[in-house]
Length: 94
Image (cartoon, rainbow, N blue to C red; front, side, top):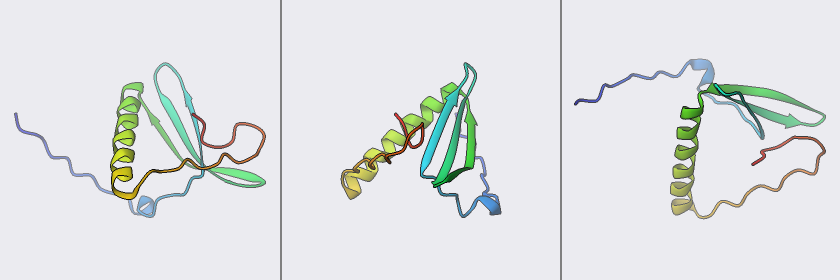
């Protein structure tokens, strides 16, 4: 069976990416919602939102774990960032 090639294009407005220093993850039985946020006290702003199915979310997590492993093999162990001392649910949470 031959693999089908899919051409993926990057929209110009997305090419530079967006910065996020926080992430909020919510879910329903049908989907996961990832809100990437930049926190610059006294406020925060959602810079990107990704909505995906639970099955695809599992594949994303696996791909992230594999790529962290490759990164650490090449550049060394990643130290987790220190959680900011703020009240509420701000920051990347396990």
